[in-house]
Picture 1: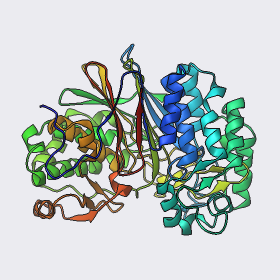
Picture 2: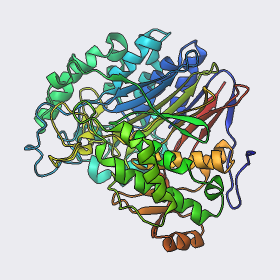
Picture 3: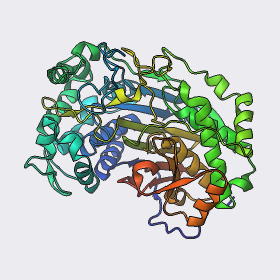
Picture 4: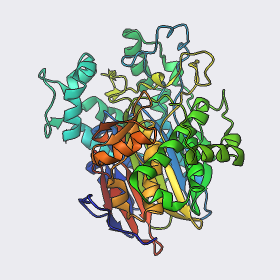
Length: 528
């Protein structure tokens, strides 16, 4: 199908960014520039990712930080392999079901798990780095010394003020005069700048086995937390084989559990057997097919998303022909699968990078909810995640909380191949709607023939934390009526909280790189 510029009623505000030697798309302009500058200095994709990721940890702390986790897909053109790196952390040793019997707090020092991203950077650099480790943090450290506050972060400081102003570390940085910093104000984080310098000089050991872990643990325990420096010591990310399935001749690769990636493949498996005309025609019918696929996949697979070291998911069965046939029957039939529970939208940032030689990387990194635990260690300047809330306190759940266990993650980087060659790098924030957004964007490009930017900017649907269906306000009212008639009553919503903000790269047949950054949030593509 020929690519189109868009479709009726939608104005595409900007074209993709083009390049031939390198492309970086991330959630902040300064971070994207840090990644591109690293490529231009002769750095590898791994080097550029670390520089970009570290910068994001400074300028978008409501979405990601040094105290967060990451899931990474690293595609190598030479051998066609895609490597997965699970840099998600685990619960502290003192985190027992008895301790959290009354529920897992959303904020504070009891809410964070051991973060995995820093050692994930180091393990990736050991395999794929070119530039010296110490050279990768200059941009982030300079930004920590001083950078202008973005409008999105300024809005988050106002919106979540009640959650975060009570923490002394957050208050000193973002409410220095008793009021939230406005957009454009200069943010100064000397403790974080010093921390980045330590990591640059000493590597991840200073974080996990040194003074950074000791400072975080001491601050946490002084405020009622249970994490100790010993919980950080020896942490290791895990190299894993991605899961793969097909859609219209493309190979889709995602992270295995504890990521939600398998739920995306289950949706695509169900939709692959649907007549393309059904997925490119009348909007109400098209959306109803997508919604049935999501509900069927989540109902069948969500309960298995957990730490595979303790509770391995039956991945082969979930992706089997038998399961696919059952899912497809629900998509094509009139039966409506049960609602599946969903996590609320959270704080997540993303990176895609391609180097012009057919290699690519997709990264999703996060503190989970916006501002994570809202617990910022004053000694290191690090804002901690609240990933403990990703666990269940039901002891019979595969995702039940246990010391040393990793929680379920909605983080879902995607690599798409066409004929064995890299075609798309896909990421988006948005909690459980990450898989939904990716399916919709692929549907837009593959079934509807839309070009990259149009596919991203098109209105989307999502789900809220109750599993209810949300419809972008950009859709016409008659679409909502059509969906209600099909058994999908919808609620209207707008903005990025549930609809995400895609950061994508497409590689054309001639090798030209096209980067696209979703305007629903801050997102910037830069190329060379």
